Length: 275
Image 1 (cartoon, rainbow, N blue to C red):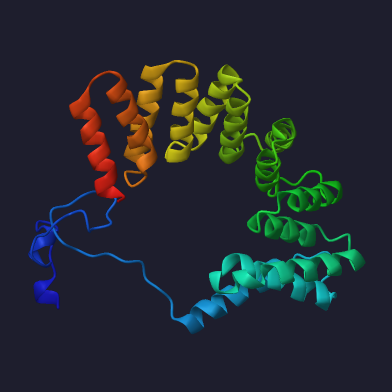
Image 2 (cartoon, rainbow, N blue to C red; image 1 turned 120 degrees about the vertical axis):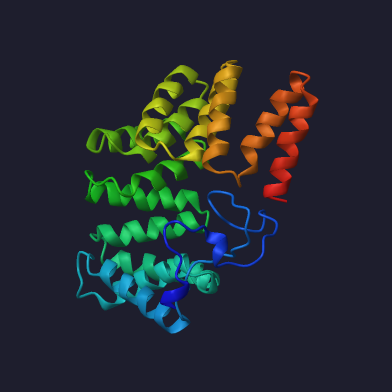
């Protein structure tokens, strides 16, 4: 009530429970008190209605909204992608959408959804084919190119992945995700200096992205620049303390340098945060 509402001069512990271990508290910043915070969950009925509304909004963008069969097929794929309960129906939904697109082939949104569905099913060859159809219909769109590039990369077609990412950046040069993917692709091709240039750009656009920093560290390590690698991994760990990968790399570097106490500390911290 009003009488017990803390003012700005009081601390959180004045109205919370007894102190306890901080490791069970999923805070961004660690505290010394026990406040279990969980995200607000919608009721199943409200969540389902919200999901249906999002699907309907997306389906309004279909080239031919009069095609009820196409709309139903797209809804099935999107539902399968977004809901784990429906994931088992994904192959059937993809077949349904592919059949619908045979009769309605000039639907960019249809091909986009089909490509995303194949990507979710890890059928990267079909995902690439679907995105190719979309690219032919809408060459200036960029929203699909990140998945297109990732599908190409997973097929080992790194130069083709570079091509679609560079085309995306020609249209939208401030796309930080595209810069990060391009940098990673270049690093996999052992084009480390080009990759570092792309990582610098990605970091400037996505300064709080731990994945960009971690991959930048891996690229620096591949170039033999250990200090830069350590700096990037520490930054990645700072941005995402619950990701064990930076700690593992920092442990390896400390062990290679004979700093066993530091290596043990990194390893224990990694295990403590993410057992």
